[in-house]
Every structure is written in C-alpha cells, then in structure tokens.
Amino acid sequence: MSPRKVNFHTLGCKLNFSETSTLAREFARGGFERVAADAPADICVINSCSVTEHADKKCRNLIRKLHRRNPQAIIAVTGCYAQLKPQEIAAIEGVDLVLSNNDKGELYRRVAALGGKCRAQVFSCDTDSLTSFFAAFSSGDRTRAFLKVQDGCDYCCSYCTIHYARGASRNMPIADLVDEARQIAAAGQREIVITGVNTGDFGRTTGEKFIDLL
Image 1: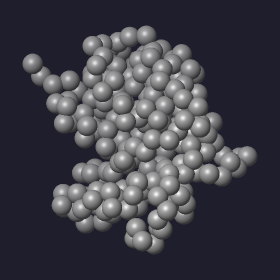
Image 2: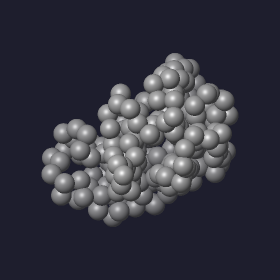
Image 3: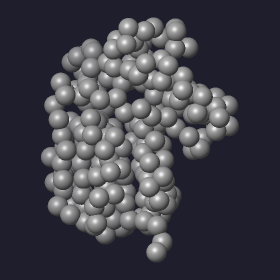
C-alpha cells in the first residue's frame, strides 16, 4: 500500500514558513509522502496569514482551488486567519479541519486520525488562551534555515491583528533554542535566520535577553 500523499501551502511570513516545515517533518516521520504544492494529494495543509483582507481572500481562493483540483483531499487550515475567523473558513466547501494557532502542534495527529472527508471540525480559542509555543525551524527547503525564537506581541495596535492572532509575547529558553540551532547545523545548513513575531521582545517569558541568545 502506497503512503498517503500530503502537500503544504504557506501564506505570509517567514515564521509561518518555519512552522510549515516543522509540520512537514512530522508528516514525514509518520510515513506520509510529501508532494509538490501543485501535485495531486490526499491531504492539503494550509498555514494561513491574516495581516490584511487581501491575505484572507488569498486563503479562501486557495482553499477553493485545492478542493476543485482534489475534491477527495482532506483540507486542514491553521495559522492566523484560522485563529481569527475559524467559522468563516469552516463554511467553505471542502474544508475538513480548522485549527487555532494554539492547536497547530496537534495538526498532524488530528489529520492522521481522519479516514477521509468529513464535516468541518473546528478547534478554536480566544486570544488570552494563546499560551503554547510551537517550536519550529525550517530544513531542507532552502539554503538557509529559519529558526523560530519568539511568538506573539504585547502591543495591541489599532491597525494590527497580530496580537489577537498570535497572543502575548512568549519564547523558548535560550538553551532549547541553541539545541535546535545545533540540529540545523548538523543537517549541513550553513546559515540560520532568526525569526519571530516581535524578536525585540524576546525574553518576556524566560527573563533572558536577545543579545544572550545571539
């Protein structure tokens, strides 16, 4: 029996790119075959953006396109748009799973448990509940690797949705991030780009300093 095929679609920032890469590694470890974004697949994973209304529209159009192209494929949507407007996404034909940014780390497990198409399941939470940190780094996709060191933002600017989509500023301890950087280097990648929502606020949750991380 051939392995189930999965493809990935990343909208938005480099932070999303690092998270998608980590999700892809989880699927690979689980025996799934990753295929190109435009190839037929059994599962389509979308990591969405919601910085602007244009970003939301781009995600909706992508969902419809994937469903037309692979009507039997399971479509799972996570990311900032899924956090802010989960029911709007769930109402789109073809969507099977909508996961908040807090549930992103559960995406592989929830998708793997599905046997096929189903009525859209929604796993959502409010901004105050966005407390988990999904550790992530990219690998193998490009010459450089993107290492996620921070998530969230404490500034509730009136023109910006990021605080509501990502929650409060938080980070992993420096020691854990250094271990991840060593994994990246051991895999042969020569350059690491540090990424986050607001890297200037690194250390809010651990009492450490960004300069010490560097």
